[in-house]
Image (cartoon, rainbow, N blue to C red; front, side):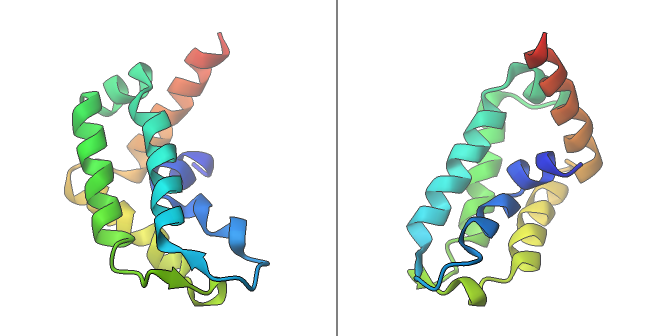
Length: 117
């Protein structure tokens, strides 16, 4: 699934800072995650395929941000970010709500195909 997992589960925000020694503001990670979720939640093809409406997608995304990013310190060193935890936490939030990674991948691919037309 690659990109879909990265977008849907926020994993793609961490590598951006992997080479930096500067502290990363948690608020920046939150903003990046919200932007990524927003792109998917605004895709009619994606939300219909997943079986939820845009507001439910947004609510679930916010829940993932609150559970997975808000516990981080206000600023964090890139080497202290646990990529596995940052990816698995949102996946679990979505899975608990009944949305699997496999389904997200299929729906992401479907949305990408629709946008390409």
